[in-house]
Amino acid sequence: MATREILGKQLEFDDDNHLKNGKDWNPELATELAKEEGINNLTDRHWLVINFMRKEYEAKGDAPSIRKLTKESGVETKELYALFPKGPAKKAAKIAGLPKPTGCI
Amino acid sequence: MENTNNYSPIEKVSIIISKGSLEGVYPGLIMANGARMAGIDANLFFTFFGLEAIIEKKMDNLKVSTVGNPAMHMPTVIGSIPGMSAIATSMMKKEMEKIDIPPVREFITMIHDAGCNIYACKATVDMFHLAKDNFCSDLDDIISVGQFYEASAGANIIFT
Image (cartoon, rainbow over all chains, first blue to last red; front, side):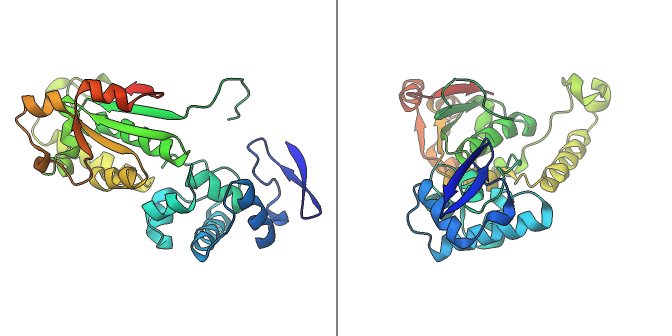
């Protein structure tokens, strides 16, 4: 666990570098977290994925599977990997301020 | 689970699928998809009966094997009754759907769209007198063992 300052606020992160407290999250923070992941500009399509993941997490307590994400958000697999290169599941969850997804699919 | 050791993370995997039963094919598919999800480069190489998973006319009809598998907890004489394999297959497919594991064809497209290369083994293709048009459109290429090793440079090779 580590504490880092982002946008003038001390924030706690878990061992996987995911935001510890969901209530610390806001869209401005997401933009900063995205930069840390090498995504300098969050487009509407990024936000579609991020918001879908947050909604699913709120309802189910875990991030959605890639299959569910692509089927229900309307963002197809290829695009998802283009939006979040190097691992869409973990990356999108990190930016969305959620813990690392636990699913296998 | 935390990464508490000092080993460097896996960056690339080449997964070989050599069996054509449903339970023989899925582990490799799940591992390939899981690799891409985690940002790990991946190749899938289908050989021998594993080829059935990418043959256009076979891939939708893979079955669970009910004989020769002690973990089925079913005597061979029962497992060999016609229809047993179909029942076991339908049960397994239902359970997989529940945990969001797609059918073989959809899964292979998903894995391919995720950036994993899909290869068929040339020796097996020749042995079974197959050609590229016998395969689903997600097949990238038919390659030799030598080409497989070349494509696997820097990868961990996993045989299933």
